[in-house]
Image (cartoon, rainbow, N blue to C red; front, top):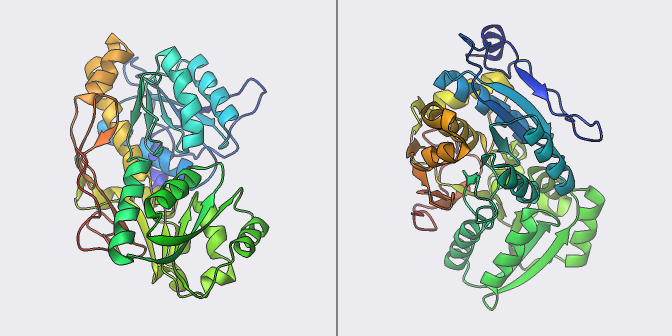
Length: 391
């Protein structure tokens, strides 16, 4: 079903969340976001989608629209913008709680997910995080948080194992985005490679081109460099690869998960020597839908292929919809328990959540930047995954 068909079949039910200071989302709500008029007086749950402007929020909208259409669950939607800022994320979380949200899905950035989760915990509102990889996202102070993506320590384990296997020693460089999960990845990888590699590292505050150029000068990249790691947001990584020193160099480049499926990786001068750390794609179904067809439907809505966190966002919405049908009338604790009891068939394996709410059953690997696998996403660059399946 394409966007025009959805717009006809599903009148818009989405409304913007307004913060205390009067701000509303800094992006347009697409006309196809909505689940149709509730039938027979059943208005279903109120779902809050909270993310920042950029490709990820549109992927979240597409995932929610398609998941609710496939499940058939009537629902109302409100939309918030966390602006990639921890303080704004807390304000958006409070706005979602005031609006009466039954569940919040989004906050892909760990810097925004971490403060928001405490507010949802206090309010008793389920928070499903399909993009945050923070190791400490779940826990006692976030009992209502469920993490539908892998964790930073798993990604670092994958990167270190692959690096030590393929390049036992040598000079590598890490470009990491400050005040972003990329900074944590860079610091942890440096620890793992210590004593085996000569690591040049620079942490940059923003993806501003001048900032990137200054970082390159301060790091002093030389002809002996064997590998470059780029950790941070997709926009940050794009700014880095625009640099002539990167674009024209022979070094292999390894990107963190946020760059998975990024359009800039299709550039011939980058694609042939790039790989991305991400979840291994080895299956052809996502819940009860053919994964490749689902991605094609999302492409029809978005006008481009969906990005890194579309599949996990779709999974989160489907998991919540099933749990709502079983336990929606008995409170959020029962809904959370119903989600934890589920097992899902996905391209990333047979997945479920741990008691703490962390995703299990997946595995990480370095994936080729431009080849495609059974579900339409990237295939492993290496014959075997770099880490064991996480149970």
